[in-house]
Length: 93
Image 1 (cartoon, rainbow, N blue to C red):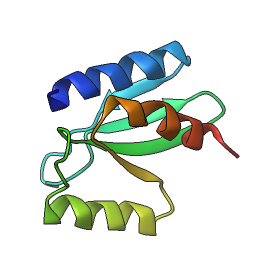
Image 2 (spheres, rainbow, N blue to C red):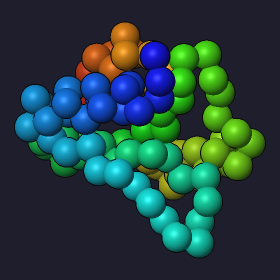
Image 3 (spheres, helix red, strand yellow):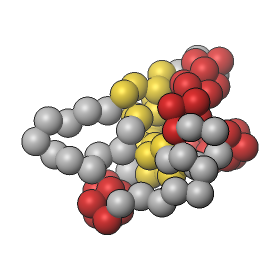
Image 4 (cartoon, one colour):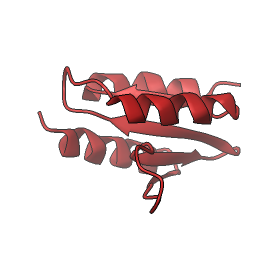
């Protein structure tokens, strides 16, 4: 399975929950996560999507640590089976 298929499935799952999975592009700041997930109840998280078995590049890991240091949750998803668990975690109090 390719990364873009996992990304599409994430977007569909988020939409079914009444949320948005916004593509995140930040000119001048490389390595940011692929999507910002916005769910009802002011729930927000960043998601980096990878092809199965692939890991984030060092710069992506650095951006993940920076965002987490600011208090934002950041998830890495490399299989469609992870999507439900990640969305449940984002929704939890």
